[in-house]
Image 1 (cartoon, rainbow, N blue to C red):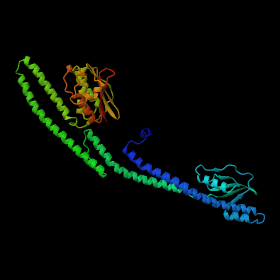
Image 2 (image 1 turned 120 degrees about the horizontal axis):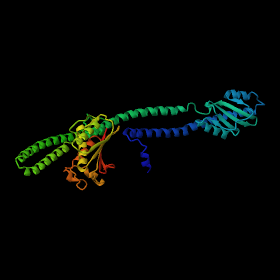
Image 3 (image 1 turned 45 degrees about the vertical axis):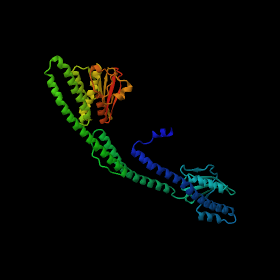
Image 4 (image 1 turned 180 degrees about the vertical axis):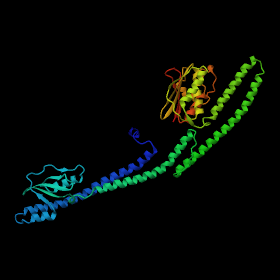
Length: 434
């Protein structure tokens, strides 16, 4: 449960996680070393210097004891030790120090422990120390230099640690960035190839990254060869099959009308199925991306259906903006979705929504729809869901939704199916990444 909560606040990018793995141990090491060094070294040094100062204060108190018999003893001791003695009317009753003066805590503790006559230690000024003493000779204040009881420039250690720690972290970050850059280039090339673009890429970086890059190049070359071979094969199949179909049509034209019409329908159905197979096998990589206005593209498709008498309406259409699209593939996908909506329903509503991250083309119909458990099955090639769709309204080969799904994936998106809330039939969302 703790790690699941912590995961939400951890960086998601490879740069961020690698930087955290690099910087976090360095920072923790510096904090631990600083704490140990301060608690051991500076505390010990401050205690030793405070004890030495306590002995000097004791000399001053002894000079006060013999002041009547030796009047020159006290001035000589004060001048030698460079301590200022003041006899105030009242003493401070509260210890004072600056909030960041941690060594002052040790000094105050040792002074009061070793000198019972000390009533308060004033450290408001980090350059001097003021001891308030209640002695047998009255109230006195002793003022002396702070450097006598604590190490000078103790902050230099922390400054050096921070400066060199930041410098080394920056150098390590530059090295880390150079090591991660080939991985990012590989990810960009792989993502682009998934969308049908073949970006120039050469393996670089560490041995493992080079191995992954070479494997990607081999995979890309095999897929491109497979697509090319499939296209050539289908071109031959198309040419070979269209020739006998043409002969069938010519032969049927010599028959009587009563015998010719059902056979011509079969030939036309064979022709349509052949075209559908070729469109699916050709895939979405036959055309290149170009700047296209998706709103204008959808408007043209809807206008074609409207002219043919179909009840197709375009709603909630955003302002047009040209974006890179495989226009022929997108046209084929939208045409398949609208064609399915008209085939299995009486009307279709189309809308276009475009944001900074995606383009969504929605097609809704008033047909029988598809049950949610069959959504995944409906996107498979050659899937025909007779119980859910009325096949009497037109034969299909089960490739319309599959081609639309391939087009969405080629643009870094997805085809989502759902229930239309306005018409009650099927809702198909063709979501394309930008």
